[in-house]
Image (tube, rainbow, N blue to C red; front, top):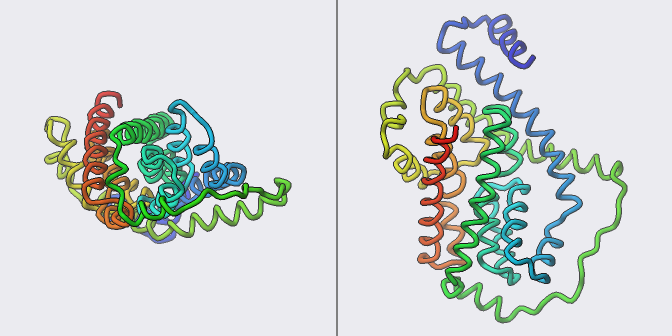
Length: 322
């Protein structure tokens, strides 16, 4: 139905020719924009319902007051998956976890997963690649956060936290109060949840339009074979090369998924394309700059190096599986 609407709007109303690069690009832009916005809104509503009944304060109390035998990495990664943050937006909550005394490996599990898996990424992936690839991506993203957080936690990296964090942890005392939330009937809370979901959509709308615009341009104007030359399956180094080039870049899922869609349409192996995306949204120079407030450069380097390695491995596994 969305495709028929886009065809009617672009070819009948606008009068563009379907056989031209401009007509194809504009049609792609309207189709993907409408599809992604609809999916994003409804998935945001679902995630906001989850967040409303499982708030941040409760998670922090749960992780610090119980012995979970490793399950804390799963809970932290899962919480990262249901929070609608990009890598830079995840930093304030990450800082709060570190300051609150939550183990460093657990905070890393959250930080790794949060930008990779969220309702924006899930909504766009379902609309772009279907349920099977979306499920594989979500599960592997959560596993990446769990394994990465576990390994970083076992490396005993606390000495490489910044002096600012160490001082706060030393001087802080545990809060004596407990978090309480007034019980509100679901149907009274639903309008607020829908408003918050719409706020998420508005917050990423610009990124969606820019990303889809870039994807539409590439879809209509980039010649066949351009990307295959550098990122084809025959080049064994395509995955690490894509990840290394992606790390200095910065975008969130809303901006990069449409580009990845075009990569795949142009013949790039999906594993290579997904590895590029994970590196763009999960690791970035702005993120490193923000993390400098709580980490030394050595710890940032260890974190970036380990996750880069894991993403490269995932890229090869994706190419084998998909």
